[in-house]
Image 1 (cartoon, one colour):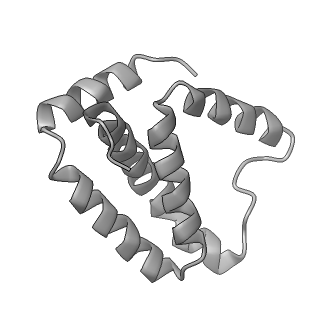
Image 2 (image 1 turned 90 degrees about the horizontal axis):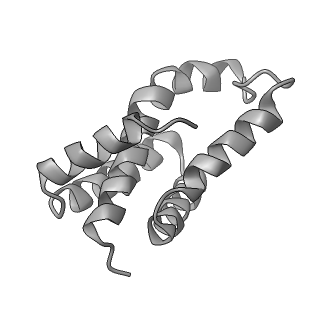
Amino acid sequence: MVLTDDQRALQETARRFARERLLPDYQKREKLGVLDIVPSVILLDEARALARQMLTGVPEALVAYKRLLNQEAASSFDDALRIERSASMANNTLVPREQIDARLSKLKGRKA
């Protein structure tokens, strides 16, 4: 499947979000055995909000991102990071920086 520039930009945004917002505490939580990082009383609301946000993206990018997540889920943490890096580097070469910045600006202005 060939992704459009917008799809690749969305894919990179999702990867950057995972890297910058989720990864910093991931290893710490993994060592503690903590899987529920969202309080259970708001978990369903948070999941629905995330699903609504994901639905605003390009469908093909969402499919590609889900495929990547499934591949990573079946891997060790170190292998998942290698998979993520490889996919990011491959996609980064296809998207001009200006398009990524424009997409990020648009996403930052959006409310969940």
